[in-house]
Length: 103
Image (cartoon, rainbow, N blue to C red):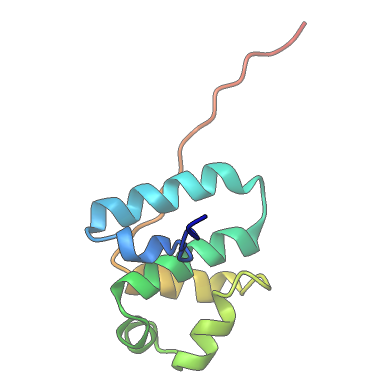
């Protein structure tokens, strides 16, 4: 029987345009369910797609600290998140959530 060769899937290899990166981050935010480390990992995926060294320079961080912050193993500070989002050429926005009151 022939062996099947597999490779590890890396989403960063498929994030080519700013629109794809923004859509990926939006989807991850929706799925995160409040998990800041999950969102940090998604930002790490996007940073790898753009080039970690350039993102680190643009965010004013060392490459090593950027890797640690976006590893998904911890929740980086909000200031770091904002700097990385800006360096990635993305923007946060807020949207009102309309819920129906239960009576």
